[in-house]
Image (cartoon, rainbow, N blue to C red):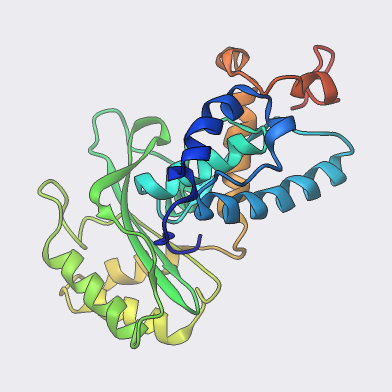
Length: 277
């Protein structure tokens, strides 16, 4: 998503203050092309989502009413922009917005989970791409439930002058200042590595050196690196989100999720005879 728009917002004008309440009460099918009172960030995001929505509907041969979103940055502004853009297109959320790193951990979490009397397993997730990197710490609890460690999941750091050096410093800081109840890196149970440059040899060397510098047993380091889940596709995370959204749509809770006015009537996907959503 582009940087926050710093120009004077159109929605602050008198005409928009008068029009907005009326527009909000109209079906999205009528107002989806009216952008005069929208924040520029919303308009740009809506244009991108409209393209994806159109491509999806063309492939399916019918309209869709719901969506699930991954965001690198789930800060309040970014999330509100995405939600407003979705609403403007007549799409309602199936799940809460999922941070991209979480979607990749869900896609590549271990096949086993801690026993009920075990502590949650710490998992380190690293996105290494050509123009950015991100580091996040998660835990996997009983039944395989994945939770972010509050304060230890960062958004992407973009266009660093020395990206490998910045990554090295980030890992060193994380290992030197771990959460109070997690021992790092010795307590790590799993590594998830993803991104369009995840197989970069220099990146893998920096990661190994960061672990070695902490004086871990050599065998533990070898096991972590050997058993690391390295994503083979940048779509692994979105595919995981799509899977969990589909599972949720097959529950009784989903029956209470509203759709935009008239959306289901026009779609071939949501009739009572359909079992696939």
